[in-house]
Length: 311
Ligand SMILES: [Zn+2]
Image: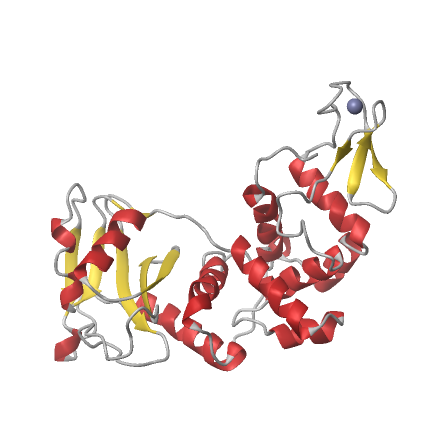
């Protein structure tokens, strides 16, 4: 990518800004508290008095000025049980958000001084923030659907499984809106049942669905209640584009994932494949937000935090 990227000012978020905004663990905790209690904790959950809560020294807690009841803003978040500095978590999120191709645990280890094991665990937790539940397409809009073989085998084959594949989620099915968002799911097989299930769950009725001529997509127009229009391109005849019928958008995404997994992560086991797909999808879905991916990840922390009482 040698194209010079000019990011508009409102979409910029530099490392300097990050360092200024989050210089300490306390600043990071304050941010999470602010997200979960906008304007601060002002009413006590226990004595119900309308009192300000003050930071408890040495603990990740805020206490009611009247009865002393503690509130823990990290409860139910991915940071809850961690002994790692909150700022290291934030740094790891910032780094993960500012790359296009992915970033290795080795690099966060180098940048923050945590052990490789800790860095790896942090990244795995952060990927949980990047899992999204989307519905794509809709009446009058087109989505492309395609499959990818993890490990680079059998691209564009009919989906027949090889011996030894059983139970391994080594295939990926994806749906993408043109100029829009993507959903990519690891799957055990490329059967009509799998493709239909993906469509039903993630594609809004009355979308036009572009696929290649693999047999697994054949029933798409017959999905009950879907009203999908199905347009196929004959990859098996080496035809790749006819008018607006192609799957080039999703194939572009597959190359991004393959370059990333091959070049940065080297290899990814079937067990963790979905979490890496989530990571690539999350960034792809925000590719027009400049450097604002880190703030988006930060918002996910409180969105995903469990709703149990914070005491
Ligand atoms: Zn109180």
